[in-house]
Picture 1 (cartoon, helix red, strand yellow):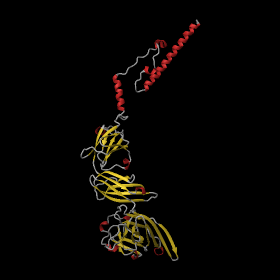
Picture 2: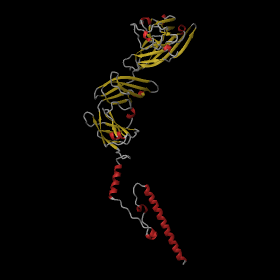
Picture 3: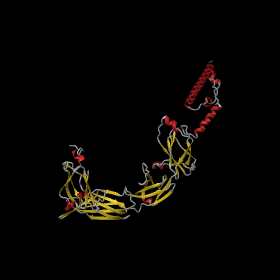
Picture 4: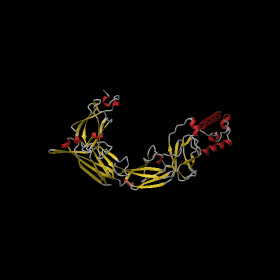
Length: 497
């Protein structure tokens, strides 16, 4: 009796254990179904269905679901399309047909660069108008160096397939042609026709590029051209070479800047270039023969002038190959040394400059003297001079009609033999004291002419011409008369009273 009861108890225990196992397995399968994007068959996950003996009347196996032919075809189509489209459902590549804007012929030697950009969604009106992509017309202005530094992602003869993605710009060009920009920010077609305008091609090669740590080439239209770009076209040379493609015909200024190895010196040269329509031109240039050093040494007689007077040097490179930007320079800092001797004293000022080779003019301020020297390429030339004494004088400029100080400032220019100023740079440029009308300065030791603000009436220019500062009286008073119509105007000397 006890044995029969034990067998019944064991059978009930096994049946309950089997039922618990089935419940746990079914719960796990249902959890996987909720997490999955694809429908899963329960019997395929759990394995063979348990027998009716193990489950009793509570464990009827669910029927197996067979996928319909339409569902299987839909799944295959999704898989096949995902191979050729981006995660957003857009094509992962675009077919570019790049043609000549005039002949409509397909171009060879096409190159495409990809620039990633952060693009915000456009308003609906713009989105409907441009369908989610924009093709800029051929660019007259070439892209910056950051675009040229990008790798080429597609190249060859048109048409060509180009990989792409959401939120990028494709910069497209062909050898000898300008550029176009294709922005892909929302949607794009499978094929786009790009029309490029043909221009001149300019290749520049610097023969001694190994002498420099970096070469920077700049091209811009010359001053005679009416056409202007917002910024010059700057490129860094790779192994001494830079190529500009799609340039309009015209006159250009080509500037090369070399960063010398082992020093902070820069070497520059300017070279004019004239490009014809559709021309392919190669310029071979060198930087090595255009610069030299000028060592300057000036001595001032302190015992005669009382104190050091040298203020500035005005440097003019007179060679024909020097650009207008580099033709002139100002030097205001010097290495000074004071030397004293019994009954005498001198101030010596020195400076060494890196200048363009060729004839150079040095004007000393305020002394007014000028020196011309030939700077020799690759060499150091010395200019050693004892400066003449300038003359310290105080003058007063007075408006006799208003009985007030003359307003503004006074300038002294070096005077040429023909009676005109020989330089646009003044030797002296000082404000007139608004209360006293005084100007105190070291005046030049050469002929000079005074120019003052506001033209006085009945004044001959010869009255303000002097052979030397030595001829100025110790307390010279220059009386001037202002025009009558200035009575109602506010004078600078009256401001703030």
